[in-house]
Length: 187
Image (cartoon, rainbow, N blue to C red):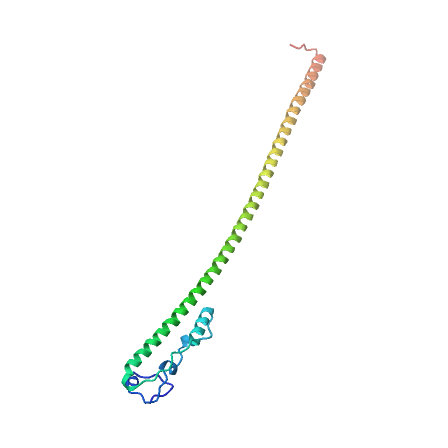
């Protein structure tokens, strides 16, 4: 007779069972850590674990000595079919979660892209304003410099014209007075 806490061996499965009904190996086997894990970080894995642990187990079957191998085959087949259904459900749940996550990430990316584009547009506007101010200041300085230079040249020209004429007239008068004193005639 097999004990409740250990896995059945192949030789135990091939022995003829006692006349009393035996629980199916699925119910008596210890739960796998994959299907009973509860401390998971992902919502999808929690849902899958919950779906896998809450699904009804296959009905109990009684094994008779003459149909032992065929009963085991049908039990294995039904267990495999149930596992396939559970895996398919888990797969579809995981895909839904993945698509939802992808959608959220796409929305975040779109919002971040729009924020970056707005920041770039504002920076470009500020750059244009600053560039225009610099250009205006440069043009004003250039105009002021040109005006200053024109004024300085005009003042220099006036000074040269008036000063030189005045000085030349002054010196001519001084020379004439010297000639008159010394009695020199002008040629």
